[in-house]
Amino acid sequence: MDICDDWEPTVEMLKLDQVAKVAGVSAMVGLGVSPGISNMLALIAMQELDSVSTLYTGWDLGGATHEEQSSQKGANAAMLHGFEQMTGEVKIYRNSAYEMTKPLSPVLLGYPGLQSFTGHIFDHPEAVTFSHNYPQLQESINLAHGGDIDSWLLKGILGLVNWWLVSRERAAALLTWFERKRTVGVEEKSPQAPPAFYGMAVGTKHGKSASVGVSWISDAI
Image (cartoon, rainbow, N blue to C red; front, side, top):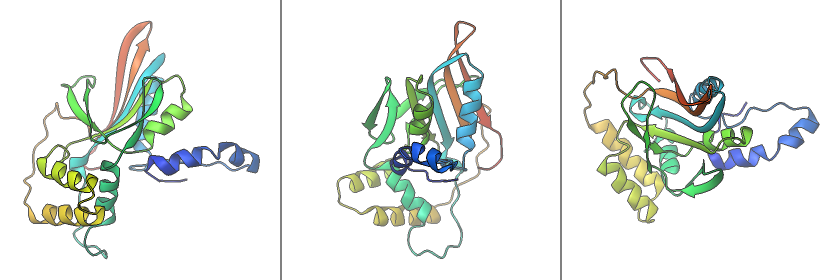
């Protein structure tokens, strides 16, 4: 069981499918965040429809918390990994084909029962694992929302990294310092707030267009 949450090594591991079968090895790869909760939520959503054309997985970055104490100096590993996922390019599945695109690009989501909200394309293996296992899909994208994902501070730091003016390590350390210094009040979430974790499938049910969202209900991620 592999909890890797990068698409690049996940694609390479998927190529070993036949080798694993010949060796009699069962492998679960690309489980990603949680691990595996977003994958299972999306699978449940798919099973509620007769056919699925579009699949989204996503979560709220605002629910993530930083360790008060850490053996690491500077930026913690999670923050550094986050910068790796938000810079460069990310592979998604769209229009029945893989494509490389800019991370954090906005996607308007009409989640069932909630007001439409904007998710941001986030580097994660779900986009390639679902399209690999369900070739009938026309679109498979992983998204994130909440936190400071749309802030000018984060956009500015990411721009410096993408322009090779600041290393990812230095950028992660800077954002970690800023997050620890600022005071964030506890906000009461609206009933219309996007879910902490979700899988959403779009397709048909009994010959009609339909969409299904399956959420993780919890006070914490």
